[in-house]
Length: 77
Image 1 (cartoon, rainbow, N blue to C red):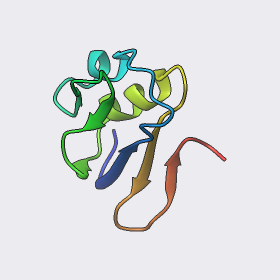
Image 2 (image 1 turned 180 degrees about the horizontal axis):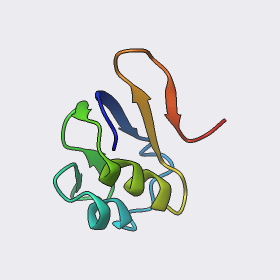
Image 3 (image 1 turned 90 degrees about the vertical axis):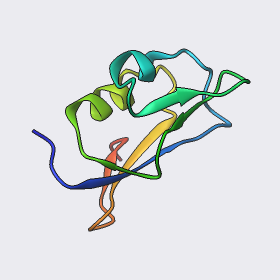
């Protein structure tokens, strides 16, 4: 189980609005009027659903960084 706080960002220049993130983590992501995703909050509680959303993004537009350590958790380097 994921623990801690994560900084979750969506690269809006890459996002294609597939909605996969919302399917995985509907409480944490939303689509705007242009059908581009963004995290509902800048800092979110770590969760398996958020990691699943990032992993399921077809264009890897979602990045996850440990808010406490600065470690990049997704995408892998």
